[in-house]
Image 1 (tube, rainbow, N blue to C red):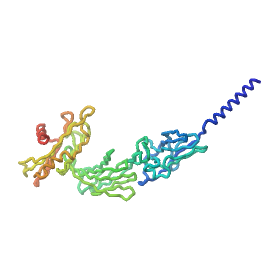
Image 2 (tube, helix red, strand yellow):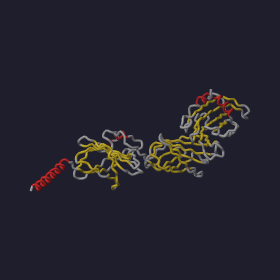
Image 3 (cartoon, rainbow, N blue to C red):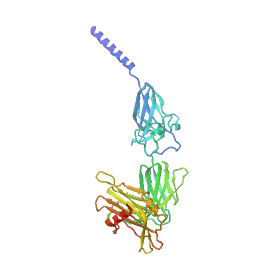
Image 4 (tube, rainbow, N blue to C red):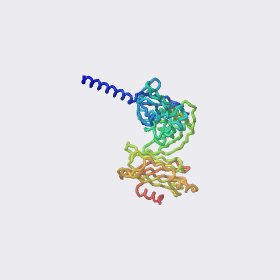
Length: 436
């Protein structure tokens, strides 16, 4: 009898304990999250990648916060639905909601109330919701995160990941600047972050160059198109380059240009922009005539009074560069030549891992300007230029000797980078003339 009573008391105790634990343990419910994209002034963005997961932060009714919860997204009809999130029953506030792709880049976000972009959604953050017996689905309104957007526009300190660049493929239809034959043409897209270069396919019968540039991010681009005539290694080529600034949207399909204007085709009424054309002398540089590896190029303006100079090297072996420009008054037959003035500059490399090295690009429009200005009131008809780039060893030297011959009875004087007449003594004499 005593044994039976002990067993009964134990059963009652265990039953009572379980009832108490049930009363103390909170009931659990589930929440899922979907999304509805809203349009901004510039419309919806076309995405090339699919949403992969969401990152959210929720505030519980007791004041505690659960931050950066990550939930996978799955296609659901025309939208996406997250995996289940288990939460104790009660009231909550959603205070962060950002959608990412598989590269951890933000695609969409719900703006906070009071932020600059909150005016485009009906219910900005924070969003209240309740977890009860039934599954709760929360569907925040989201805006596309554009490449130029900062998190602050949405009211966030940061998204936690990089902003995804919205990209598009662009068909190129570029009309020649004139009706002459060109050997090759390239188009270059530049912005503060990147540079994209694409070779164009020429048609010297229709005077139209075509091509496709793939996966170009939307945004504002500085676009330059260069047409080249008679490219020979280490010798001058004529380059005609046109520059224009255009906005490329994610809906863009084509870039079309005439000889004077260019526009982007994206479904809206296109805005044509004027193309600014400039002519250059272009040198593609090789160390020797037998070398198959280009070392870089040099661009000089067709107008000798334009102080522009560009030197680009493809490998970081170069440690020194010298550039000058000299103006002369020369007789028609070349028997007399009087120096009228000019200018020069030199650049030394910066410290690298193993040796000093030049910047990859040297673009200068100011160093030669004072020397050119000094001859503006003088008589001159012949201009020449020396460009010297030196490497870490004696066999690494690129040398250009270029001439602008403006004498009425003379054609242009030929020029090339392997100028045999320019020895060390001649170069030192040239530098003493300009560098005091």
